[in-house]
Length: 536
Ligand SMILES: *[C@@H]1O[C@H](CO)[C@@H](O)[C@H](O)[C@H]1NC(C)=O
Ligand SMILES: *[C@@H]1O[C@H](CO)[C@@H](O)[C@H](O)[C@H]1NC(C)=O
Ligand SMILES: *[C@@H]1O[C@H](CO)[C@@H](O)[C@H](O)[C@H]1NC(C)=O
Ligand SMILES: *[C@@H]1O[C@H](CO)[C@@H](O)[C@H](O)[C@H]1NC(C)=O
Ligand SMILES: *[C@@H]1O[C@H](CO)[C@@H](O)[C@H](O)[C@H]1NC(C)=O
Ligand SMILES: *[C@@H]1O[C@H](CO)[C@@H](O)[C@H](O)[C@H]1NC(C)=O
Ligand SMILES: *[C@@H]1O[C@H](CO)[C@@H](O)[C@H](O)[C@H]1NC(C)=O
Picture 1 (tube, helix red, strand yellow):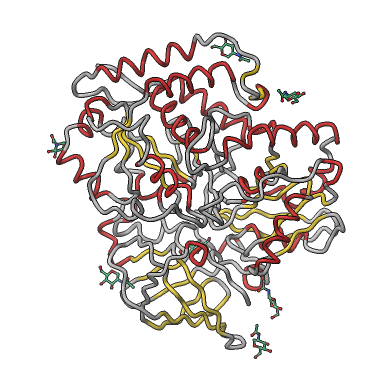
Picture 2 (tube, rainbow, N blue to C red):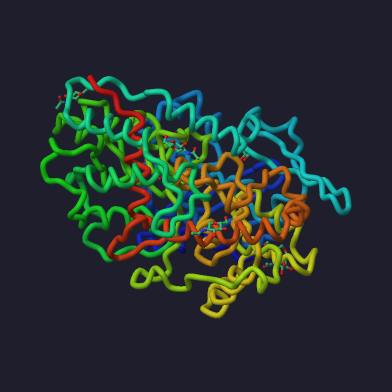
């Protein structure tokens, strides 16, 4: 049984191991779980835990590496919602492994593998109240599959997200600053200028159809380029600064950090000149305390002009309280987990294979040469993918939906070829809502099909995602084929052209260029602050 974790991709060499052996029962499966290693000092750690899972029925051993774990004995340092008494209730899908003093529990449903999680659907009556059961009916044979979700309530649709955005942009939410600053009025006047932007239909090859309002976007972008100044805090460890540009799945935060650090245009040395303050590490509360104690700038606005750029799964949870006024650029942009549309900005996950040539493999076949209707390949992370594969693997000749592909160079080339010659690329959520497939699809000029309820796509405040991507609700996964077939060829060709039109916004360059990913991330942060700024 092959299990590829995000950790292998992250290339984290510092694998600490922990020791304790235990029997766990989760739902219907009994597992013997053994862990080896040194305890991790922080509740949330970068280091993965390696766990051996022994299946009780046949004693087969599987090694699993997991990073999303929580140490219950160390709980006092975490958000108050984890406090005593509430412990179990709030252990949502963000933690694959729960460590308490004696015991290590693996959540089998989270480390979902097709063989385990789908053998026997769990009845909702015996699970906790936070658990939502979603039943998926296979339209071909009437089979019902059950899907366990850990979020209460219905999924928020894209049109509801649009309303949330409009609502958020029209209401001031930042606290009143403790004292005034000329920067606030500069931001405020930028907002007025954006609002009365003169109407533009096309500019430098940008295609108006992919933007919510290209006139406002161009005005805002131009003002950012001319006005924005950012102060970068130097405190604390410098985990990435002096290293080469990173590769791997969490590369977005590293690339942004590196490019921001070396930027001459936006960065100022004098914090009094800054409109925005960048906290260049994504952990932690202590760091914010350090800054708040040492500088007056955090205190002026309660952090409202401060921002972070974080791609790790825990970025959201860990900063929800401490940075409640700040702008958070997060990969894990899940509205059901506290991502705030209009205030936070969704950061694309970019899986950089070669730091030297991030633009490698750009492009794909023209629509008429795309013979595969839909493509997906990937590990069985989370509850959704096992269902996707179970429903669609080897079911239709024009759908290539498979589990993990081998990781040798030939298979990687093959993976890209599938993306380049498929009409639609399925971006199904893994453990969390975000996946590098969205950007991969755009790079390979394949129309992304996002199956991740509550996921806010990158640059949502600027881009008209429905013009170049398809959103399929998780509960509609059994209708995937019909949904895709119902899109006309003409509409498809238009969408595919628009994928190419947005491509430039999703590309890293070692030296940033206009409208590229670096600038778009910074622009979204600027845009959020511009619409939230409050003067004294
Ligand atoms: C499920 O089990 C079968 C037989 O043991 C094995 O061949 C297959 O690879 C397993 N599937 C997964 C996704 O682990
Ligand atoms: C969990 O936290 C406690 C208290 O800080 C610590 O003693 C223990 O070693 C930690 N366990 C693991 C497995 O990290
Ligand atoms: C698991 O154990 C069974 C029974 O001992 C054996 O037949 C099977 O090949 C094993 N599967 C794997 C994936 O190792
Ligand atoms: C395991 O996951 C299920 C559903 O995803 C959840 O109800 C349960 O609380 C989780 N268990 C632990 C120990 O986190
Ligand atoms: C875009 O915004 C500008 C400035 O507010 C406005 O005049 C224009 O009508 C808007 N265009 C669209 C298509 O909404
Ligand atoms: C913009 O997209 C439309 C289709 O959506 C296309 O007809 C038009 O040619 C495109 N314009 C540019 C400048 O690419
Ligand atoms: C900022 O505010 C916090 C709490 O209100 C306070 O503890 C800290 O001393 C303040 N820092 C400065 C530099 O004023």
